[in-house]
Length: 79
Image (tube, rainbow, N blue to C red; front, top):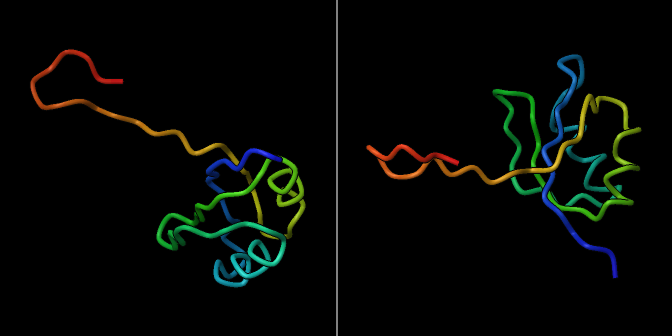
């Protein structure tokens, strides 16, 4: 069974983000958030699906979503 990962998809500014989101969903992305202000969509899919999503019109980049922890205030260690 393929491993499902979280992805951040950067969308071209010349494409309506909601239309691109619909196409991504139709191709297998489970959408988590549409971040219209910064032109990104987050969601989950397996690696094969993510590779296929790269070829959708309006997709500029797909990158794995990485959790970042800046730690509590006043500590020297961040992530």
